[in-house]
Image (cartoon, rainbow, N blue to C red; front, top):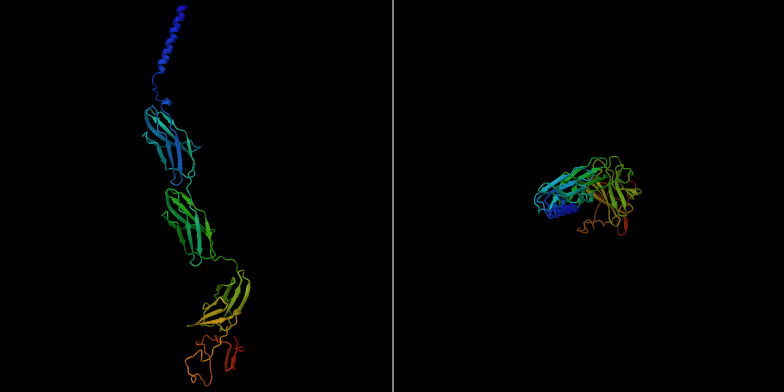
Length: 383
């Protein structure tokens, strides 16, 4: 019995020594994770450049290094893309320039040793890339030039190719009215517009990859139709409209061959109307577009009418009555005549200077030394 116990004791001692000897031996298994440790990864997204920059710690394993593999996948999909293989152990950054807008990505960096054994880093998620849209700042329409001046913010994203300025009218397909290929060119002028039409504008940024980024839409119009009312003018007549003090609208129209001046408030309610009665009826020598009226700050109205090759201007009181002007005969008209030359024998007649523009002289009164010599108000002359 003593011999057996002694023999087993020697066996146990031998086994213990063998185990101690194995523990001291170097580890050489190429698939040992402790010999090929993973790296630590960080990801930074840049919306302006449209890129994701990956940075990781340098490989410090005991197994010989072969390469880094940069891996990317879309959450929810099985496919994993190898973006690049990097054989240089000291290169620990990579910039991903292939991002699609509004897409989530998961990144890993695998270290591969010389035996082909790969160990992955932790997985890092990059938020979706958002390409910035421009803002349409103003659409300033000018009725005087029938134009629209447009201005927008500069594009702050990657891969710029062009600005495309779109214009549309309700119910119609948008049209491109301008294309700007310089990123700093952020304005344009649209011309040839018409009144009472609402125009909608939008600026589309087009990238080198064909991505399209639309701005918000802005609209504008001029000479919009607010209301309509009848002027009671002749069908073939060409009227003129004027904006006058007191928010009044004056309309110069023609009725039965004579000019009439109508006055309205902004809502179209008639305020007053009167006929330019001192002007003869229009005949074949007159044009419907030859008349014009104006109101000075004192409320005195003027009316001008072109007749053949002449032009006459009449002045009126604010109530529409002709403005009477007293002229001292021979003194005002002929100040250089002697007293004997101012004596007139026979009849005195008044002539307007143009046979076709009669009616510009009204209410003629002649007096001398306080005595009324002649009076004619043309009351009996038919209009």
